Image 1 (tube, rainbow, N blue to C red):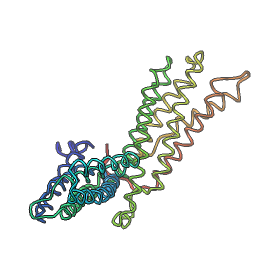
Image 2 (image 1 turned 30 degrees about the horizontal axis):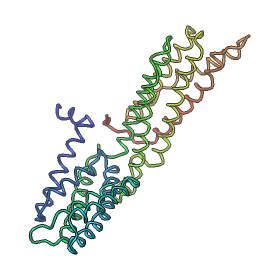
Image 3 (image 1 turned 180 degrees about the horizontal axis):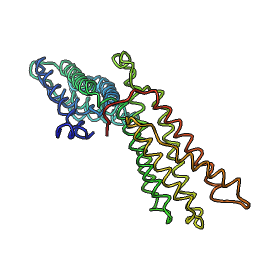
Image 4 (image 1 turned 90 degrees about the horizontal axis):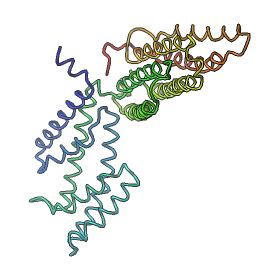
Length: 347
């Protein structure tokens, strides 16, 4: 039970995946009797990511950068063969590739590969061309080891990590909503807003990882789990919900005279509960999102506006945001409905 609990932590799982990828990459290099098997280990460490889609993206970037760097490195080896000194044959090539890598981040491994090939001087019994070829083989082994380790672990699938990140973000929004709707307006929102921006960016990157995984033949054959389309819709909804929670906090700061109105406390409880229950449903819980209190609050707002003899500023300003928040949470609940129930939650 302790080991299962230890593996529930995402960082622990990723650390174990890294260790397994290192052992697998070196084991394959040893079986093939490659002269420098640790280059495969280095590639595995560089490309290894928590999920298959991210590993595939990093691996493809490294393959492209290494191929370009290897070709340029062979040109540097030819220059050295023609009599150029090591700095003269190396620095201009590496500098140009570093400039290109700055413009195109996917090619950042190019200058490293060129430097390795030009400065290696060959391995005993192997020409410079053989050294370059061995580097490519070793890099491919490292990438393959990373993909094998993440591909065989269900917890490494990008869709599961995407749902876990969505759930964590919704829980974060629930806490922010409860804080922002306190009578004193809660703490300064700048730090919370910066944290939300980082979480939303991470969510967008995970959608890209899901799309990469969906192109893998064995993932297409499986036919189950989150689709890129569903993940894109879910990410867009979560982004809108984050904006609406922020708008509710800004409204309270705009209406200091209305802070003692019981309406705010009701909204604080209803919105927080709706966000938390939606997060539990997204994370794989068996119960659907509980939105009834928030829907009841929306009905109360409409009744207040209809019954008010004078302009009811709090109810008038809150009616729109509450309605939008409820609508998006309903859409998010509908996205979860057709999914099969999972027995374990990813954290």
